Image 1 (cartoon, helix red, strand yellow):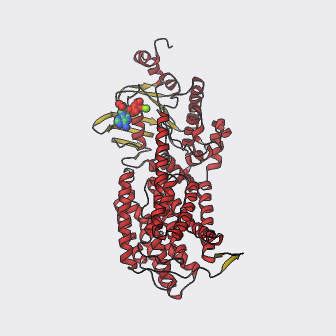
Image 2 (cartoon, each protein chain N blue to C red):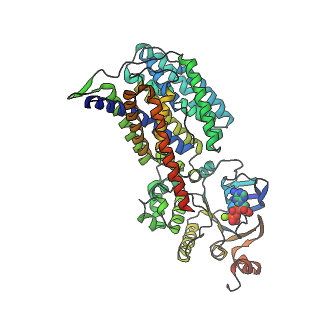
Image 3 (cartoon, rainbow over the protein chains, first blue to last red):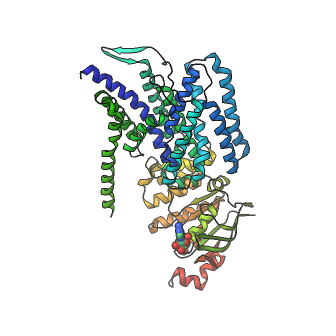
Length: 340
Length: 237
Ligand SMILES: Nc1ncnc2c1ncn2[C@@H]1O[C@H](COP(=O)(O)OP(=O)(O)O)[C@@H](O)[C@H]1O
Ligand SMILES: [Mg+2]
């Protein structure tokens, strides 16, 4: 391997790693705030990708009807939880209707990349708080294991719905920009720049949100001390819903960013999400900077193993988790021994 | 009108009753104390009023029935609990803990309230950047009280604020409690330190194995021979 190939592999790895980093961040966030291991994260990637790809060709995406259906289900769940009906109707009936109407008006005229991306986010993101209200809020006091089982069930359900609403064939969208930047022998595609730039901007945005806004602090407070948070008036359901909304938006954005690079199918999200998950696990589901670093490592490991042993690329990436888990459990045991 | 009235309250952990048939009233601007030995059910009582534990019987706050209302809704009505274990946000700074105490108002009132709380607890101002988890026991209690005050409660419930603190700091805490009642907030104070609690309170209830066994004016209770013998020690005067 010469240095040019190595440079290309590193570049590929970092670009993929940036996507995994976003997913890892949202997994850590959702777990910290709600104790839910967000297995359906990958479905949001697939939904975002397929929605954007449909808009890119000027057709109405199937996810619009999914949005309406899940909104109606969330409305019923909210009624059962005796939430105030006005806000409930606004967030779960009026909002999907408005998004559908906007899409119906806008899409046939192919409004362009930015509008398509924003519209995709608007269509896919609300699905996350809806499934929180339907599936997880009633279980807020349940154990991590019960929540995990619920998350697996939601993942399977959303994947099935993906097949129904998007169909079995894959889609790919055109790149955000055809431009590329070259420095010497080294060239960086426009899409790669978009991915790195948006990922960086989003991370800075999240840092600002968690560090400097009252709502961001409230989410951190919920993660640190659930009872303490309730005692200052931060509702568990409210922070859970916000965490899910952020995770849904991050998943959808990741999908929008990848779909110009690779063909995405209704079930492609899972493996992408699993790599974010690997990074989050390596970071112990706790550290945000740790998760970003681990995600970039996962991306680079993936791109080198696909060069050397492409048939084994997934095996190598997911096997990397084992020594880390071993190391963590050994270290954890040692800490417990110290305490005694 | 009373700020808080509790009637025939009962709480059990599974099948085991922890408190039974408790009735008590906290009047507007009043300072009422509940004293009793370890395990009497004092924390259980406060947690039930706050909605942390489910209970039977009636709890009314400013003539509003709280039955079945979740904790955070009670906070938004103006009830605050400083729990026995403080429940601070350990990795967040002192200042962030306080800001979150005012969560029910959003951002608007934070500045004035923050100054008022720093005025009551100057130590917290000195340490405002430090993570709450690094504070000493006394500072933690101050932060827990400060955080509760940031929500400008109408009713402040304190669960053993003197627990595990050095005598000098206990004196500070009780002085601040006396200062607070002068600001008009109604206070329900749970204590094992009966002497100090009866000194600042107007009325007191004695809780033993989940039931109220004595109640009355704080002064009367402090002079009651049974109380003197059980809680204040023979040598007290
Ligand atoms: N989580 C719990 N599960 C079961 N029993 C409990 C629990 N918490 C308290 N108890 C029991 O309820 C009784 C009252 O406890 P508590 O309210 O903490 O008393 P106090 O605050 O007066 O010391 C005690 O007998 C205690 O053992
Ligand atoms: Mg107690």
